[in-house]
Length: 583
Ligand code: OXD
Ligand code: MN
Image 1: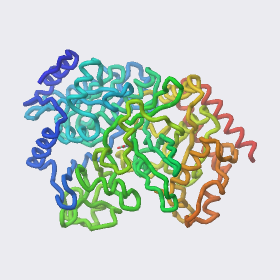
Image 2: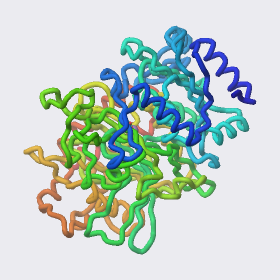
Image 3: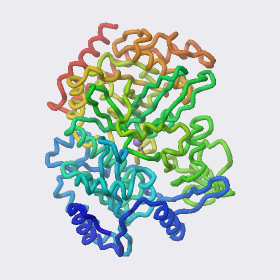
Image 4: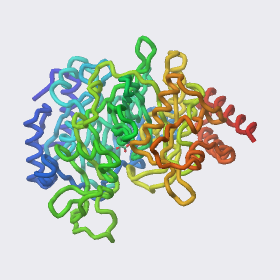
């Protein structure tokens, strides 16, 4: 096949010349193509079929043990000026970067098939959707992209019509971590990734395009590309509010997006629009509207069970690709905290032995179509997206951050987002459990200088007076013995209800130096086994701890030098002064 769009055809030809594949296959996105690739990978051993009675059409992929997570230390943003990438990114001069990575792509696809994957991020008929083409030599990437994006003929038609698309070149290379690089060229709207088959490094529509490149595009075009889930919360009267929530990787976005209301909340319903990425645009009325650019979920498996996330637990019993989980003796997938069955073979294919560590890799994943989610909202297909009532930031913090608080204004909310910190997780290579600054949960994903990004966020206040309120939540507070103070999961609906009540001006709040907090009585704890002391601890602002936190935020903000917007500095000073007065 060829394309009528010369920019696309010329690029495909030039990549083929460089990488020298044996074959070129243009992906149509059809069922038969998907099945053919699945069969081919079963024959090559890249996919293993799981128990077809209990897990029909489910497969296991075992990655190279050195290739199990995103590699932030090998991820580059390559802009002409280093300061445009900012201290939040690792930078390389674009010409040097191309030279380096093209050297690795030279002949990299010899003996392999080169797949050309046209894809659309967002509903194909949405004005907010954006287009891309990924070239890869990995059939695992092709089948995963078919689940995660709108991929194939319909996307190609729109690409040929519009003429503009993000170019993503990927090869698994030789999987040697010393020859692994994920490079972004925002000024050229292009991505080059080599040496990894792991989702966040290899499914280029996701983190590389829909966050790093899209955040750059969004700044130029006046919208926002964010690491946010999108959820609809319907009350028993049938009114629905939509929230977009930014939490760092593996901090419960998928669980919150698919929350099941607790028994005490009969009549409440939850609708999932997205579990990882939101693209937010102002409409002509000044409302912020969100679409989910993705079409599937690439979720963390361990911890998923009938209690923590029944929707996901049920959804992944068919038509799912698992990566790096363990298996039981009857060949069902198994993971830590599944609460049923036991492991026989670990994620590396060895007989399970507890002394080798967890049976499933802590960052093992499921890849599944969003349409399989019992709480899937059909509005996820709406070209105009959904109106957002509240934006919610959060992190994994043992102490300090209360269960919930509301920013005093949009500008203050931008400071709250900029100050987000969280304990690191297994989603990225590196130490786990270390608190690090993760502004707006975008530390690994903002494709440009955070100082410019905050300025862009701030600019929305001049464009609309209907912006959503901004909140911060923390489900992860612990007591002195390391026990979680808040039950989390479905019970988080109680906190979302306070957020919605605030958006409707239906409830008051207590003003503190860091923001508005609920009165304890305004979080409905009926039928919940939680002590008054725990609730008080969850809703407390410890002035001394917050002063130290503001020192740490201040130091972090200063690392952005002169580019830091004045409005952020002013908001920062106001919080510091309010804390001083509160002594
Ligand atoms: C993800 C991540 O996979 O954030 O969504 O790492
Ligand atoms: Mn994510």
